[in-house]
Amino acid sequence: MKLENKDNTLFPEEKPKLENEFEWNQFIRLGEMIGDGLHNEPDGKWISKEYRRLMVLLNPDIKQSLADQRKAKNERIDNQILKLIATSKCTQKDCGGQLYQSRSGSKIMFCSKCKTRYKAISKKK
Image 1 (cartoon, rainbow, N blue to C red):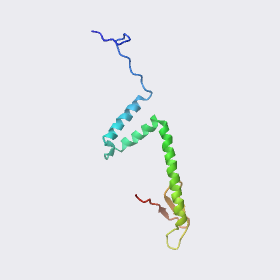
Image 2: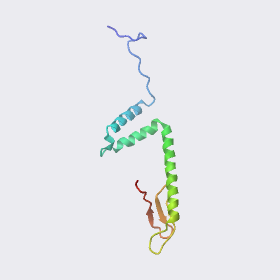
Image 3: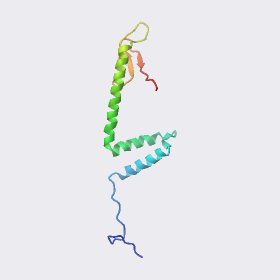
Image 4: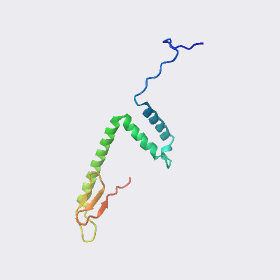
């Protein structure tokens, strides 16, 4: 008994290979592992990291959207820190110096006189 498909060939036609089939298969496997909750295990942090790395690799548009989110977050933090700096002074004894933000997007502030470090803590809802 001989099996033939509609093209009269003995072997069925192979599926077309994806350009990065291995990465897609790995992405699917990691997604299943996340679905099973393995990424919450003590040694499962690598699953989330690898999933995120593959997500950005396989879909470059996600990389741009993540960068946009990061920029928006930094702008929000900068505005909050500017408001805080406008109303706050250094609390060290006999200083009262002006505070400044250490870098853009950071919640760390320093006194301009005594270089004391302050950290802005956000309230939990």
